[in-house]
Length: 327
Ligand SMILES: [Zn+2]
Ligand SMILES: [Zn+2]
View 1 (cartoon, helix red, strand yellow):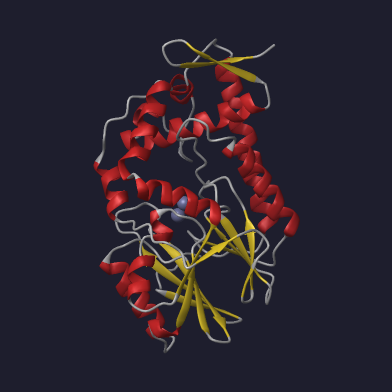
View 2 (cartoon, rainbow, N blue to C red; view 1 turned 135 degrees about the horizontal axis):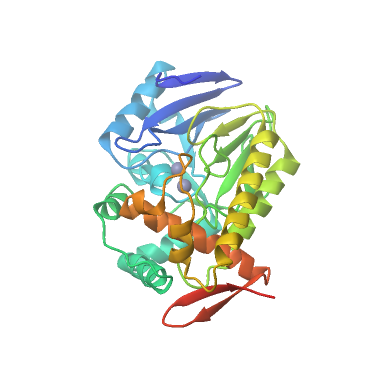
């Protein structure tokens, strides 16, 4: 069931607040308030705009609370829609901000040289056959984010009150899920969404195997199990294992499509992306907007580099990278 209500009390001291993502097809990001002895933990806080701040105040007010009751913000990962407002909230008096070490490493590298990350990803996509045209959307993402230094760095297995940190790299290097030890429910951030397929991209040289990490992280949360799923986008749903299985199957299907597309001979990642169907509506690559095309190419590279990691494809450099099946 889809609801446009601002908040939903989910029981056991958990409140879902739908924070707006104006102009974005996702429509909302869920901030979750989790009651602790000293007040609330807020999981994810939306991007940096006035309407998000207003929605947060209004959501707290619906439950007779104010921002003063929020004692800490735990950010599932460093993307602008989860993290952007954190600096504003700290300045407004929230004492603590918690983020995984790998995402803080990533964010602090961007902070130390803000334009460099974009430049490196543009070079990388160019080398993979896709010439980036700077877009307004990219500038907009920067405007809605603020990479704020956490007061506490998190690592796998640590506790934050009733919440247990599970490191789930893939969507970002330091993405975390949080198991609520009081109820057995899992806050999954952007790691497990339904019906959206989380984005796993490969955005610059020497980034390891993010898709391999993502698949291992899916298997890991499936092993841990949960009595319910509280995702960052969309509505809570009961059956974690069903969705994990679907996402694993989706990645396997994509891999088969890519291996098939590689059958035509050495290809750039952009060539391969151009031969695949995109989105749940099976759009052609050409019908995607330029910014979405960047994500499509980065996802294709994540698959190709995963196959390369498994030595099923190799990569040649002939005026740019060409992938070819081994054997
Ligand atoms: Zn994200
Ligand atoms: Zn998100």
